[in-house]
Length: 360
Image (cartoon, one colour):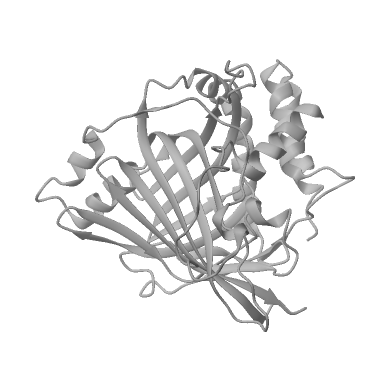
């Protein structure tokens, strides 16, 4: 249980730079408020990383002339594979309620690699794995903390999406072939491979710039918010993925929205911008993460397969956040850890464990 608590803390705030000597001045410089100058986030520090400033092979392949639009789309998605330092920045930019005061901005960072799960030409699956070292009080480094992080699946001209509706519920929506022509859906999954959000959009390639922009997307509160905010129910916004010579960038433009009991929009509290910058690094020790992924791959294959069955067969899917005080991700992480230690019987418990959190 101590391990699960550590993982939960890590997932909530990541490992972040000490921010006490930094000021945050963008966007609200006219307000004298100390909370805006000192973003929240984790308080631990990590070792200095070595940025890889060379042009990536994936970037150079993306610039090749004469390839089809479909192939260029594929290469842009595959360009997100790699080993990265990631910076996360989020800030509210405007509010819509009487007496509104902007919430404290958020900044953190992590080190993670993105590995290929599957490539079927019109379907590509990418898994993110955190491998974080923190600096202890005596200056030495901790043992690596490994967390299976989020997953993103990309599908070409995907007509069937499971869209978030608020209150931990997802509903299937079927689009016309005309609506999704030339598009790719992006499906984002939680650390336990349960659904998070889905949307579709078009990759736009202009000379040396390649970006994908989603349609308006509903999604659950992010982990940086759900433990400290209870005044809104869903984020609604757009996601922009842009490939750079040194990695890629995820931009967000979100509304923080209150829903009524019918999952209809009742009120918009505020707007927020977000930026996650993935920069390639070299010399980082990823071995603990790669060992974990290899040792537990069969377990997580079966977890993914069962979620695929549930999502394909269900018109709606509703999940309990906890059962007997334990979240589903904590339960599956513990089972994966037992499997890694040699308990193959955990494979037979996957379906029933997931089912126990289903409300319908």
